[in-house]
Length: 334
Image (cartoon, rainbow, N blue to C red; front, side, top):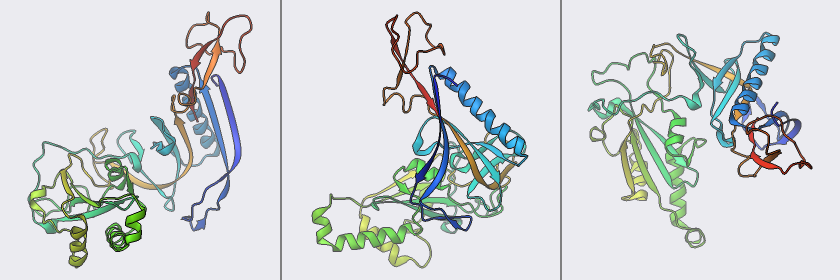
């Protein structure tokens, strides 16, 4: 494979107290990785496809059901990755696929098509619901407002239950969001109540300015929503939020559908109302990283100047003694 390939089986250490399938994953576990380097993006793509084929062959030989889906590369980076999942009701990952075409993605990447040209609804507050997110530094509270029905009061087409916020889309719009907070509003109020009453924290920490952002689903008009839409029986908490943020409140009408996919929703690729939603366990993950790591590390290889650019034949790990060497960028995937 390419210029260089390295397979590693090593112990890794992560502090994750969250249980999985009823078991608490220990801080130490064994992971197998394959790292490869190539001379050109084209060669790297070929290597990536070889790795994908190897995964499929392995699972086919085991004769187990599996799903191959486009995935979010996350903190590792790169612009292309695929996950390999075992479908099961006990799985933590949510996988979306289409019964009419080849569309298949991890929910983290799924986005519903919106419409900037569609007229926004002006139904009353009872037809909407607010969902919240809070930044990691606890300074930024985000309220996302979604419709709970159409203007005629009917349930939205193809949906078996009220829409829920797509938290991954919120994370995309506001990268500083911490999706692990169970009660964003209560946490925000508690944090700033303590912060404002502590003269010591104000003196020793860099000043943060609390703020509230309200974002509206593409079907919702901000003019039809009461400014205090933090839910029923929360008037005191709502008032406290506005006391904390003061005038630091922004509003924006999104051109996107902010809700999660549900079974029977419209497929973004083929347009048929045939989306399937299922849970799964991740079995493997391939990443095409390009020069995401090799460029910052100045990872390069030596080749004779007479050798055409992009050739796989390289002098790896040493300088050529007969000809001066030219350095080329290496492309990396795992």
